Amino acid sequence: MDAANESSEGTPFILPGLTTNPGKQRLLFVLFLVLYVGGILGNGLIVAAIRASPALHAPMYFLLAPLSFADLCFTSVTVPKMLANLMTPDRSICLAGCLSQMYFFFALGVTDSCLLAAMAYDRYVAIRHPLHYATRMSRVVCTAPVGTAWLVSHIHSLLHILLMAHLSFCASHQVPHFFCDHQPLLRLSCSDTRHIQLLIFTEGAAVVVTPFLLILASYGAISVAVLRLPSASGRLWTVSTCGSHLAVVGLFYGTVIAVYFQPTSQYEAERGRVATVMYTVVTPMLNPVIYSLRNRDVQGGLRALFSGRRISAGDS
Image (cartoon, rainbow, N blue to C red):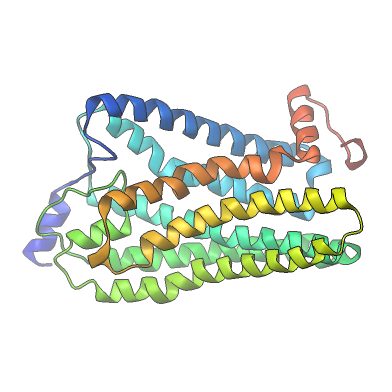
């Protein structure tokens, strides 16, 4: 190991966060604390309701439970550290902590990406092939994308972290971000990072761009099916539901692609931080509202959860 690497391991990174202005820090602390608690409660309640209610054991909810759990963990990887940094002068993080944060951030982010694609396919089958929905989206069929999402995400994350761990940081250790993220760390490295950037544009595209294209294809097919619905109210409800789903999906993938799929030399820290807030804080908070809290079955499951009674599919 060379001197630069030894220096990297001994010198902690500094995370200045979103701002160094004390007045803005307090305001941001309150704002992000509210968003974080809202996201944790929303996703946590969804997971608890699905586990507690037999009426929510349908394929859609079998996919929704791991998505909500992944969102809950995803925000918890970055937001608590960001909140702590907003209120304390010590904003340092060691190399091991930095790499650990990156590992779980990448793994849970890719899990989200894969599960969103699986849920879009579930909606496609439900609307285009309602008579065959139970067989095409059986528990066995749904288990495959969930297991694949977790496996692929951790392999993806491990590969990136192993490469990042061999980088040298011999200049500034101040990361212009509120957590340890790919692009700002690559800008700080004095090693050759071309192989990591190539990996982002190839393997990274497979776990981000491909699911996004599958989601667009699924909702495109759903749009065609909606136009054939005989009921105007049915068309309006489907368009409203799918439109809100697609809006959140577009926000998630749009900001992810804007941040990561660009050369490191063109990365702008301020714009990157703002975009990152969208997919690390905002979309995980919106997912429970968009995917479930507007759903009568989920509302029934939440009532049953709070009242302590179990409901069947016929009661919801």
